Image (tube, rainbow, N blue to C red):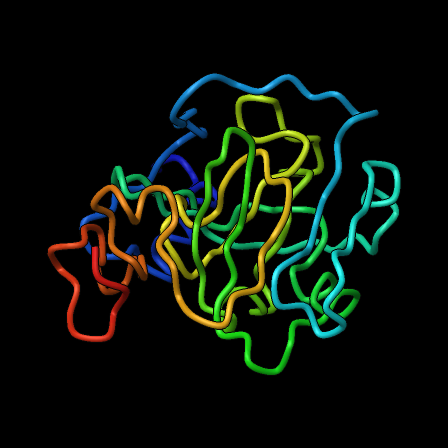
Length: 210
């Protein structure tokens, strides 16, 4: 008899992989630039831009850690063509922050800001999806620094570059604006099931002009 299928293999059979992706064992470290040093006494998470009340909302690390904790089982698809299936993520749902610091009615997009000025743009509907999570944990363990500790965004419906590591805040926007990789040739939308990897694949209305 053969070896029993792993949870990841079972997930691949049940849900399939997006086109061009391969099942990954383990979790490779992929990022651009150095790993930032975490300084809890200086760390702050900000919600700013077109907020409903016109104010900036901030949480220090202790306050953010006290927000409601949720667990999501979801896939992660990297544009470099590996996928992890049915990973368990723990953290704060994006919806929770939207409830605590609502956007103005005319907001359509969110820019997620991270250390060193890294950014990624999302449509508001994707940001507020039930499975979009500001992750602090994976499989019940705190994230490592290389994987984004103390906070990374997980957006299961999109390629993983749309979920930055080392997140520091979100900006509500009333019009779309490209983030760091979107300005450098990645697709503005980043749907893995549509294989939206690069900007040359964009159609009319997919994003602002480069």
